[in-house]
Length: 81
Image 1 (cartoon, rainbow, N blue to C red):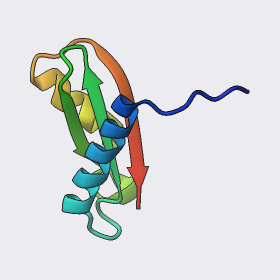
Image 2: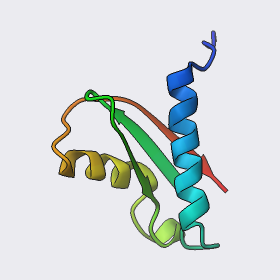
Image 3: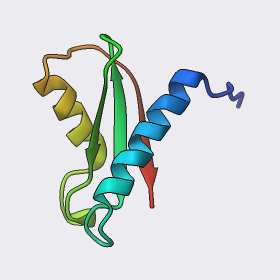
Image 4: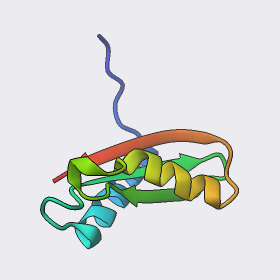
């Protein structure tokens, strides 16, 4: 399997997810954060809710983007602590 190098845009998404997780991290509650880049270029983030018992970070981030009127998602990342 071939892997492409991370782009500056990829790194920006990773940093946004890491910063969100840094702010929201609570052991056994919020241990994953996600970031999505929308077609507008804006980045939206989200965290998981209550560890494994609630929504994952990825649909939370997507819902955040959709709630702001976005319809096209170009990329997504997730980070775990």
